[in-house]
Image 1 (cartoon, rainbow, N blue to C red):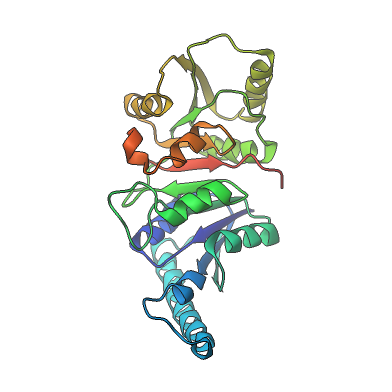
Image 2: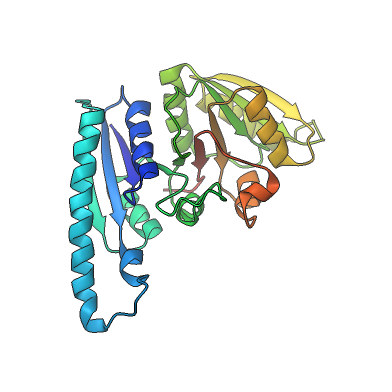
Length: 281
Protein backbone atom coordinates (compact mmCIF):
# COMPACT_ATOMS: atom_id res chain seq x y z
CA UNK A 1 0.00 0.00 0.00
CA UNK A 2 1.41 3.35 -1.09
CA UNK A 3 0.32 6.53 0.70
CA UNK A 4 0.49 9.67 -1.43
CA UNK A 5 -0.16 13.26 -0.28
CA UNK A 6 -1.36 15.60 -3.02
CA UNK A 7 -1.68 19.27 -1.94
CA UNK A 8 -4.10 21.39 -3.93
CA UNK A 9 -4.98 25.06 -4.29
CA UNK A 10 -7.70 24.10 -6.80
CA UNK A 11 -5.61 25.27 -9.73
CA UNK A 12 -5.32 23.51 -13.07
CA UNK A 13 -1.67 22.77 -12.29
CA UNK A 14 -2.57 21.04 -9.02
CA UNK A 15 -5.17 18.84 -10.71
CA UNK A 16 -2.68 17.97 -13.45
CA UNK A 17 -0.29 16.76 -10.74
CA UNK A 18 -3.05 14.58 -9.28
CA UNK A 19 -3.70 13.06 -12.72
CA UNK A 20 0.03 12.34 -13.05
CA UNK A 21 -0.01 10.61 -9.65
CA UNK A 22 -2.88 8.36 -10.72
CA UNK A 23 -0.98 7.34 -13.86
CA UNK A 24 2.35 6.90 -12.09
CA UNK A 25 0.85 4.55 -9.49
CA UNK A 26 -1.85 2.98 -11.65
CA UNK A 27 -0.63 -0.58 -10.89
CA UNK A 28 -0.18 0.10 -7.16
CA UNK A 29 -2.70 0.03 -4.34
CA UNK A 30 -2.71 3.63 -3.12
CA UNK A 31 -4.37 5.90 -0.61
CA UNK A 32 -4.37 9.46 -1.96
CA UNK A 33 -4.76 12.27 0.56
CA UNK A 34 -5.87 15.43 -1.24
CA UNK A 35 -4.98 18.30 1.09
CA UNK A 36 -6.02 21.93 1.02
CA UNK A 37 -4.39 24.17 3.65
CA UNK A 38 -6.27 27.46 3.81
CA UNK A 39 -4.77 29.58 6.61
CA UNK A 40 -3.08 31.90 4.11
CA UNK A 41 -6.41 32.52 2.39
CA UNK A 42 -7.91 33.68 5.67
CA UNK A 43 -5.04 35.87 6.87
CA UNK A 44 -3.84 37.30 3.55
CA UNK A 45 -6.98 39.17 2.62
CA UNK A 46 -6.75 42.46 0.75
CA UNK A 47 -8.94 44.07 3.35
CA UNK A 48 -8.29 44.31 7.08
CA UNK A 49 -10.89 42.35 9.01
CA UNK A 50 -11.93 42.62 12.64
CA UNK A 51 -11.18 39.85 15.09
CA UNK A 52 -14.91 39.24 15.50
CA UNK A 53 -15.19 38.47 11.79
CA UNK A 54 -12.28 36.04 11.72
CA UNK A 55 -14.24 32.93 12.74
CA UNK A 56 -16.90 33.76 10.19
CA UNK A 57 -14.28 34.06 7.44
CA UNK A 58 -12.62 30.80 8.53
CA UNK A 59 -15.93 28.95 8.38
CA UNK A 60 -16.73 30.40 4.96
CA UNK A 61 -13.31 29.43 3.62
CA UNK A 62 -13.64 25.95 5.10
CA UNK A 63 -17.01 25.35 3.44
CA UNK A 64 -15.67 26.54 0.10
CA UNK A 65 -12.66 24.25 0.50
CA UNK A 66 -14.86 21.23 1.23
CA UNK A 67 -17.05 21.97 -1.76
CA UNK A 68 -14.11 22.20 -4.15
CA UNK A 69 -12.46 19.09 -2.72
CA UNK A 70 -15.63 17.09 -3.38
CA UNK A 71 -15.53 18.26 -6.99
CA UNK A 72 -11.88 17.22 -7.33
CA UNK A 73 -12.65 13.70 -6.10
CA UNK A 74 -15.58 13.46 -8.50
CA UNK A 75 -13.42 14.66 -11.40
CA UNK A 76 -10.51 12.34 -10.61
CA UNK A 77 -12.83 9.33 -10.42
CA UNK A 78 -14.11 10.21 -13.88
CA UNK A 79 -10.54 10.58 -15.16
CA UNK A 80 -9.18 7.42 -13.52
CA UNK A 81 -11.75 4.98 -12.08
CA UNK A 82 -9.02 2.70 -10.71
CA UNK A 83 -10.22 0.16 -8.10
CA UNK A 84 -6.70 0.11 -6.62
CA UNK A 85 -7.00 3.78 -5.62
CA UNK A 86 -8.80 5.38 -2.70
CA UNK A 87 -9.13 9.13 -2.19
CA UNK A 88 -9.55 11.10 1.00
CA UNK A 89 -9.94 14.90 1.09
CA UNK A 90 -8.70 17.09 3.93
CA UNK A 91 -9.35 20.79 4.61
CA UNK A 92 -6.92 22.15 7.19
CA UNK A 93 -6.59 25.57 8.77
CA UNK A 94 -2.81 25.83 8.83
CA UNK A 95 0.25 26.55 6.71
CA UNK A 96 0.95 24.22 3.83
CA UNK A 97 4.27 22.77 4.99
CA UNK A 98 3.06 22.25 8.58
CA UNK A 99 -0.12 20.52 7.46
CA UNK A 100 1.77 18.31 5.01
CA UNK A 101 4.29 17.30 7.66
CA UNK A 102 1.54 16.56 10.19
CA UNK A 103 -0.25 14.40 7.62
CA UNK A 104 2.98 12.61 6.68
CA UNK A 105 3.64 11.75 10.32
CA UNK A 106 0.05 10.72 11.06
CA UNK A 107 -0.34 8.50 7.99
CA UNK A 108 3.31 7.48 7.55
CA UNK A 109 3.04 8.74 3.98
CA UNK A 110 5.55 7.76 1.31
CA UNK A 111 5.61 10.74 -1.04
CA UNK A 112 4.17 14.21 -1.70
CA UNK A 113 3.18 14.99 -5.28
CA UNK A 114 2.34 18.52 -6.42
CA UNK A 115 2.54 21.03 -9.27
CA UNK A 116 5.57 23.27 -9.67
CA UNK A 117 3.38 26.38 -9.66
CA UNK A 118 0.10 27.16 -8.00
CA UNK A 119 -2.90 29.39 -8.53
CA UNK A 120 -0.87 32.57 -9.19
CA UNK A 121 0.97 30.72 -12.00
CA UNK A 122 3.73 33.30 -12.45
CA UNK A 123 5.33 32.32 -15.77
CA UNK A 124 8.56 34.15 -14.93
CA UNK A 125 9.45 31.50 -12.33
CA UNK A 126 9.96 27.75 -12.46
CA UNK A 127 8.82 27.00 -8.92
CA UNK A 128 6.14 28.87 -7.01
CA UNK A 129 7.00 30.07 -3.50
CA UNK A 130 4.87 27.40 -1.82
CA UNK A 131 6.41 24.66 -3.93
CA UNK A 132 9.89 25.79 -2.89
CA UNK A 133 8.83 25.72 0.78
CA UNK A 134 7.58 22.16 0.35
CA UNK A 135 10.70 21.05 -1.52
CA UNK A 136 12.95 22.44 1.20
CA UNK A 137 11.08 21.63 4.42
CA UNK A 138 8.72 18.68 3.97
CA UNK A 139 9.97 15.50 5.63
CA UNK A 140 9.48 12.96 2.85
CA UNK A 141 10.20 12.72 -0.89
CA UNK A 142 8.48 15.35 -3.03
CA UNK A 143 7.68 14.92 -6.71
CA UNK A 144 6.94 18.23 -8.50
CA UNK A 145 5.12 18.15 -11.86
CA UNK A 146 5.59 21.02 -14.35
CA UNK A 147 2.65 22.97 -15.72
CA UNK A 148 0.71 21.15 -18.47
CA UNK A 149 3.09 18.18 -18.34
CA UNK A 150 1.46 15.21 -20.04
CA UNK A 151 2.13 11.88 -18.39
CA UNK A 152 4.99 9.91 -19.85
CA UNK A 153 6.35 6.73 -18.21
CA UNK A 154 9.60 7.59 -16.39
CA UNK A 155 11.99 5.42 -18.37
CA UNK A 156 15.13 7.57 -18.24
CA UNK A 157 16.01 9.11 -14.85
CA UNK A 158 18.88 11.44 -14.01
CA UNK A 159 20.33 11.35 -10.48
CA UNK A 160 23.23 13.81 -9.99
CA UNK A 161 25.27 12.91 -6.91
CA UNK A 162 28.63 13.66 -5.34
CA UNK A 163 28.36 10.39 -3.34
CA UNK A 164 29.13 12.24 -0.13
CA UNK A 165 25.66 11.92 1.41
CA UNK A 166 24.60 8.56 2.91
CA UNK A 167 21.06 8.10 1.57
CA UNK A 168 18.10 6.79 3.54
CA UNK A 169 17.14 3.22 2.69
CA UNK A 170 13.38 3.95 2.81
CA UNK A 171 13.61 6.67 0.17
CA UNK A 172 15.80 4.56 -2.09
CA UNK A 173 13.36 1.67 -1.71
CA UNK A 174 10.58 3.94 -3.01
CA UNK A 175 12.75 4.86 -6.00
CA UNK A 176 13.73 1.22 -6.55
CA UNK A 177 10.09 0.06 -6.65
CA UNK A 178 9.18 2.89 -8.99
CA UNK A 179 11.97 2.10 -11.44
CA UNK A 180 11.19 -1.61 -11.24
CA UNK A 181 7.61 -0.96 -12.33
CA UNK A 182 8.74 0.82 -15.49
CA UNK A 183 12.04 -1.01 -16.12
CA UNK A 184 13.72 2.35 -15.89
CA UNK A 185 17.33 3.39 -16.28
CA UNK A 186 18.97 5.69 -13.72
CA UNK A 187 21.90 7.78 -14.90
CA UNK A 188 24.06 8.54 -11.87
CA UNK A 189 25.95 11.70 -12.77
CA UNK A 190 29.07 12.71 -10.84
CA UNK A 191 30.03 16.33 -11.63
CA UNK A 192 33.60 16.99 -10.54
CA UNK A 193 36.98 17.60 -12.16
CA UNK A 194 38.52 15.13 -9.69
CA UNK A 195 37.39 11.79 -11.07
CA UNK A 196 38.93 9.66 -8.34
CA UNK A 197 36.49 8.87 -5.53
CA UNK A 198 37.33 8.73 -1.84
CA UNK A 199 36.65 5.60 0.20
CA UNK A 200 33.52 7.26 1.63
CA UNK A 201 32.27 8.02 -1.87
CA UNK A 202 32.97 4.47 -3.00
CA UNK A 203 31.00 3.06 -0.05
CA UNK A 204 28.04 5.36 -0.73
CA UNK A 205 28.08 4.40 -4.40
CA UNK A 206 28.05 0.72 -3.42
CA UNK A 207 25.06 1.38 -1.15
CA UNK A 208 23.20 2.99 -4.05
CA UNK A 209 23.89 -0.05 -6.23
CA UNK A 210 22.55 -2.36 -3.53
CA UNK A 211 19.36 -0.34 -2.94
CA UNK A 212 18.53 0.43 -6.58
CA UNK A 213 18.91 -3.13 -7.84
CA UNK A 214 15.71 -3.06 -9.94
CA UNK A 215 16.94 -0.23 -12.15
CA UNK A 216 19.45 -0.23 -14.97
CA UNK A 217 22.21 1.86 -13.42
CA UNK A 218 24.71 3.91 -15.41
CA UNK A 219 27.52 5.70 -13.55
CA UNK A 220 28.90 8.65 -15.47
CA UNK A 221 31.27 11.52 -14.76
CA UNK A 222 31.57 15.04 -16.15
CA UNK A 223 33.94 17.85 -15.20
CA UNK A 224 31.51 20.70 -15.84
CA UNK A 225 32.32 23.70 -13.64
CA UNK A 226 28.71 24.87 -13.47
CA UNK A 227 26.72 21.96 -12.04
CA UNK A 228 23.37 23.42 -13.03
CA UNK A 229 24.37 23.83 -16.68
CA UNK A 230 25.83 20.31 -16.68
CA UNK A 231 22.55 18.88 -15.37
CA UNK A 232 20.47 20.84 -17.87
CA UNK A 233 22.59 19.71 -20.83
CA UNK A 234 22.42 16.10 -19.70
CA UNK A 235 18.61 16.25 -19.47
CA UNK A 236 18.41 17.38 -23.08
CA UNK A 237 21.14 15.10 -24.45
CA UNK A 238 19.80 11.89 -22.85
CA UNK A 239 16.10 12.79 -23.18
CA UNK A 240 15.59 12.43 -19.43
CA UNK A 241 12.02 11.85 -18.17
CA UNK A 242 12.58 12.60 -14.48
CA UNK A 243 15.23 14.44 -12.47
CA UNK A 244 16.18 13.22 -8.99
CA UNK A 245 18.02 15.37 -6.47
CA UNK A 246 18.73 15.27 -2.75
CA UNK A 247 17.82 18.05 -0.34
CA UNK A 248 20.72 18.36 2.09
CA UNK A 249 23.16 21.06 3.12
CA UNK A 250 25.61 22.06 0.38
CA UNK A 251 23.81 19.89 -2.19
CA UNK A 252 23.24 20.80 -5.85
CA UNK A 253 19.59 21.34 -4.99
CA UNK A 254 20.32 23.76 -2.18
CA UNK A 255 22.54 25.80 -4.46
CA UNK A 256 19.73 26.08 -7.00
CA UNK A 257 16.87 26.81 -4.62
CA UNK A 258 18.83 29.51 -2.82
CA UNK A 259 19.08 31.58 -6.01
CA UNK A 260 16.65 34.49 -6.32
CA UNK A 261 15.14 32.72 -9.33
CA UNK A 262 16.16 29.42 -10.81
CA UNK A 263 15.98 30.88 -14.30
CA UNK A 264 18.95 33.12 -13.55
CA UNK A 265 21.20 30.07 -13.51
CA UNK A 266 19.64 28.50 -16.57
CA UNK A 267 17.62 25.60 -15.14
CA UNK A 268 14.14 25.42 -16.66
CA UNK A 269 12.47 22.34 -15.23
CA UNK A 270 10.22 20.88 -17.91
CA UNK A 271 10.17 17.33 -16.57
CA UNK A 272 9.01 15.87 -13.24
CA UNK A 273 11.42 16.65 -10.42
CA UNK A 274 11.83 14.21 -7.49
CA UNK A 275 13.47 15.52 -4.33
CA UNK A 276 14.74 13.02 -1.76
CA UNK A 277 14.85 14.63 1.67
CA UNK A 278 17.44 12.36 3.29
CA UNK A 279 15.85 12.82 6.74
CA UNK A 280 15.30 10.29 9.51
CA UNK A 281 11.65 9.39 10.07
